[in-house]
Length: 157
Image (cartoon, rainbow, N blue to C red; front, side, top):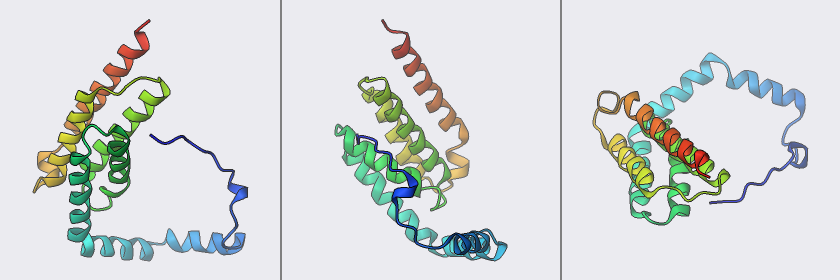
């Protein structure tokens, strides 16, 4: 896993003036921009889902390499929902939070917890009807498992 680094916002060069930034923000929040974005995602959905499937394959092949599993889960967390795979993105987000918490606790992640997340990610990404087959129940159960594991670690002497 990567070491976290915080860079103050003022250290970045400004790409636009404050007034141009405000104008851009208004434009991006407009109903027209939202409609164009939704259309673009719908029209490219199949390609986006194929890319998600590639990430899932890489994630499955990364078994045992925790750094690579974290990296692939992180990519999926940010990309799957955009591709229309909501449960896949939420499960990936849960796995990333698990890795972050384990790192904060300086504990070794449980390989069974990781394997369950990876399996659920793969099933969610490949489901023909994700909404019907991968409901919020799976996401909630995985979150409960992670909470239980973290509580065990925190309670240990």
